Image (cartoon, rainbow, N blue to C red; front, side):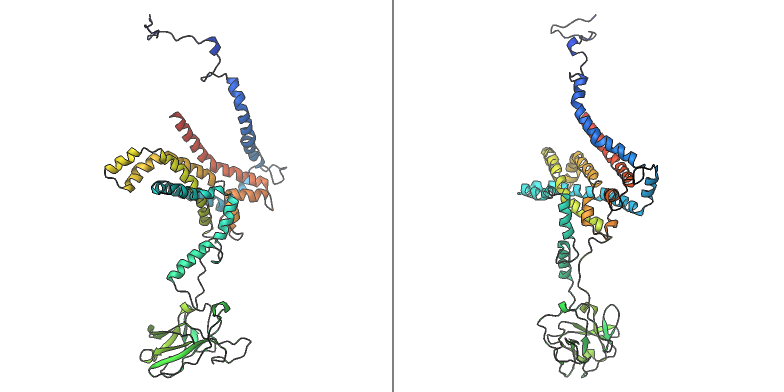
Length: 455
């Protein structure tokens, strides 16, 4: 038989104390179940009205035609899976889910780690996080301008063209070409070569036409006939065109302008033996001992069209370009959450790793990242759910000509349900397909929250 100790505690074998009558019928927290239901009822009603009912009605509506009066069964699902646009949207959604959250999370991690060592870290974090303050609509308009094809308007191409032109010399006169009656003929690759070889003392004039008005300087001097010189082959390169008409072909007429800066090559047996550049008055000179018996060639670099940058919103780059705008907006969000998690990392672990001889890269890879893994998963899953709902960035940034190449399920849903030929039956089927894509990510997130709640 069990006995009690001096302090009144029951020894093993003592029956549990009886529950007071006033606590009977209460839950683990001492609250009656009906009271908990009363507090939960508004939230449950709101959840049912905003989540459960719309999902149920969408499933019901997907079984009817566009008018909602005729039952069509699974015909709407057959239609979306027989449409090539749906497969493009699914492919793009997979690209979005794979690339967007991963890049944004990685950048957020890099920003959060590096800003710990920056003196003005708060200001830097504010600048990186600032895009989150604007709407998707505003971000779409901004990046539609950034990706403009014309370098004078699009920032991306202005930078790209500037870098390109720093390493590659721009052509002097894009689009210029000789007349059929001239002594020049196309020799492949956009270059032009004289039909016959040149000899010392002969006039090797090279007339061209087709120079764009914007390529000719306003103060371009008149062309002059090149003087003959002993031991040299001379000639003139000029624009064989007189404003208002008139003039004779292959003859330097008064008022015809010199094409200064054009490169002339002497080619013999397929090799360049001499090179010259036309002067301000269009004249040039080549050494006769090297150029005699050679053909003169105007290389394609003189006439190539001006580099106009990258077609960012073309069929092949439109999706990566839009993902870039998304990363610009959400990298700050990832940085703030990761920085909050980084603040809770024990500094003694990092210092211990450094004392053991680990480099900064090893500390980052072997200590910092594993400790931040729960936070990184939260950020990654949140962004994955977010990108599956993206449609406004795609709708605003992608031009009409390439929107089909950038299409995603959310945009397809909006256009099908509320576009010109609205069919809410097919739109509801697309909505259910999108729900199937979101559901696995949501299940993973719920399980993660439950695991953390049990710790």
